[in-house]
Image 1 (tube, one colour):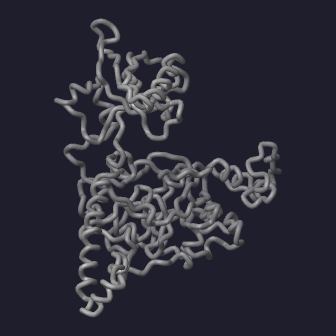
Image 2 (cartoon, helix red, strand yellow):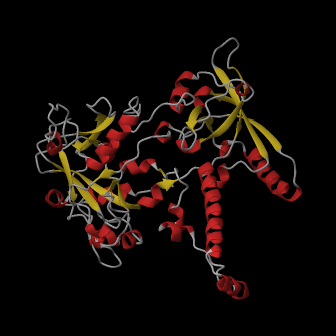
Image 3 (spheres, rainbow, N blue to C red):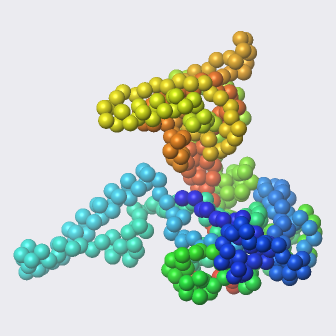
Length: 474
């Protein structure tokens, strides 16, 4: 699922020095509250939020990065880093086909356990079992493996990890991950520390980390229910809090940082080792075109949606795609608002839907012209569609207008959902209103072997010991 964070509210409080102001907390989101503070109070209590700005990284493989927007002296706060606790297990997933394999394997293993349990009973116990029902309860997979059911996978199968893992702070011995949502802090790239840099024998000219990370005791808030500092809670207590806010780290300048200099942070030895191993197995792809450095080997039948957008000036119809199909990882979508159609067709479609539920009516076909309206090209109006025809806008011209079957997608409001049983056809759609879209989990960052590793905090000494609930792998 998506992670939703009220950035505006938190950053407003932080910038105005109100993060621990009881009045503003009690007047939560009150539009009549006086947010104005004396300039001296702002300088003493406020935090600057615009020390970072996005830019192009100086490292050729990093793509985008975070740049200093002004001179930042050594020891100064570069940026506050509010973090959201995330259970590590929640970032694991399997695809549908893999889940089917898991279910089949678990069912087979349960039968084997049941047979093993019955076989080990002596004759007297078997007789008692038949008479009293003893022995019907068999060992579960988790009892056999010493792990919970969801962790038990067939030999050779591993959990997949969500892309969000790459942006979280974590510790190898903890089930707690921390997702940072500060302004531009997710643009900060990795560079080794001075200590790591000096370990090698060869001359090392690459840039080194210029910021460190620490807890901001000024902004960390105690739990509103228990009164505890969240850093002293167990992972179970931490995740069960009604309000997950209140945890704030901060990047601090390790030396003077010049304006427009790239901000770099040491992701830790666990991350560096994982990345080096990834590059060793996938030397052809140390980064991707999006600049996140988390690429993986390209596949012959894979073409990113943004590449299709550049090369496909004319769209193929559904019939043409039977012979010349698009790559399996993309589909066509267009900007369209169902509620923008005339009221007559909208009301007729709703009535037909109500009737079809009771009478099993056949599919109704509705065709209307596409029309432009204010705000139409907002991404919330992008929905799947199937192109069925095209024709030149002008006789002999190259510019095409398209006819397409408009489809629903998850998350649409009720007024935007085309009723079940209605085939909604729209004509006269310009090419500019179409987009190629990557199917879920098929973009380049989801290819087999794509890099997944959280940012490590093991060596900084900032990770709370109360959160270290996993055994060491050593």
